[in-house]
Amino acid sequence: MVSMHRVGLYWFQNDLRTADNPALLQAASQVDKLICIYCLPGNSNSNKTPSRLSPLRLQFLQETLSNLGRSLQACDQRLEVYYQPPLEVIAQLITQHNVSHIYASVSADYYFNRLWDILRQRYAMIDFAQPGSSCLFNPSQLPFELQDLPDSFSKFRRQMEPIDINRPVEAPKSLPPRPATATDTDWQQQFPDFIAQQKPMFHGGEKQGNQHLQNYFAKGLASTYKQTRNGLHGMDYSTKFSPWLASGSLSPRTIMQALKQYEAHVEANDSTYWIYFELLWREYFQWYAQKYGSRLFAFGGIKQRNPSTSFYPERYQKWCQGNTPYPIVNACMKQLNSTGYISNRGRQLVASCFVHELNLDWRYGATYLEQQLIDYDVASNWGNWQYLAGVGADPRGHRRFDLSKQTEIYDPDNRFIERWGGDDCSTVLDSNDAADWPITEASGN
Image (cartoon, rainbow, N blue to C red; front, side):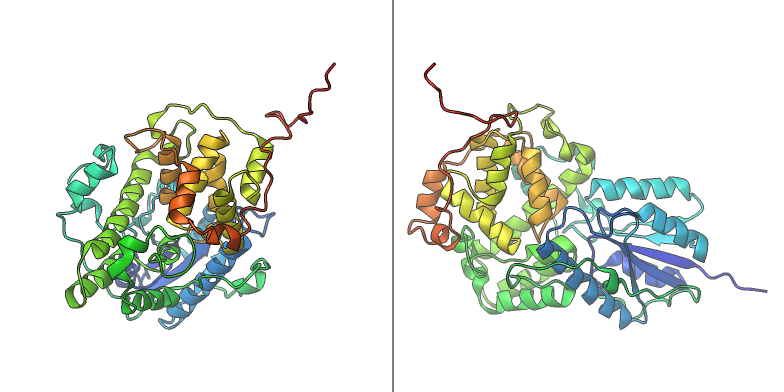
């Protein structure tokens, strides 16, 4: 009698690590053979370049995937990276290898979830498993149903703070082997060429993320985080965990474990609490994105109330290039374009300027940051843009920043603006109108 092998397919997305990955552990325990895949975002058969990804974001992604590949190799596995659309890739693999189980981590990404639901409908005979790993809390720990998610962060925080956070789980010691029929491809040979403008601030991968985590707490920076967190330039004013959190190279529970150890052995104060506070903000937006789905990207947001903004091509280009009449915004945008990163304070300032000073449709700003940010996270990015545009979870409505006052507070010596050439800009906002027609001075006729 021929034994039937259970063949699993693990679909990596924003969980690019082996530690604290419950879905990968479940796959290791349930199947005899395993295929591990990652599909590059925004691809089609005719386009080998992932859309909406800046060179710096591409470089970080390549490093992250390479590191994951080495971790899987240590478990006698292999990461297969595909350039085709996921539905096409997975359909082929199901047919070729008689896949019986498909695994992935819970995701806040609406488009990923749409594809996941389509697969479940098409392949009812396959077992699908999707444990959570990108949040501090599991769905069963929420003291409310997802549809009853509080309408503000403050209400969410008050309900979640008393709840214990589970410890991260260990990485699997071994993984089932690949099917004998699996073919090897050198995905890095096909990876798009890119040229970064300068040395990256961050390098991708689970190993790099864990090293950064250890270094941050070893320096004692957590003890002063609340006082320094609104800085604009440098590595030490904030935690800088976000690039590895966004790619899933670090889990939030791993960070919380390190934070609790620091509080137990070094110091617990308002600053260490504030790191947890910021992780809770991220947590809120993860559940927010899962609740609202496609409304995360809607012009009227979750409030279904359209802002009185439009789209001015010239204003949009000036904002992207850091060439507006607002030096602090210009400096932030030039920093973003050069490094793939800007501070939390900087993100608030450029978004407020985009919506309130330039009167632009917030979705274009959110999309540009999606393209540029190394630490792009769909829930945090789009949730925060909705917040600033007055169509999201902010109970106060439109939150507008006084750019001159913000400059006085956070760049009083003009060092940040000078560092990034924020004063080297156009003082005239418009030379074209909203329809992109030239604006000329009155002739006097």
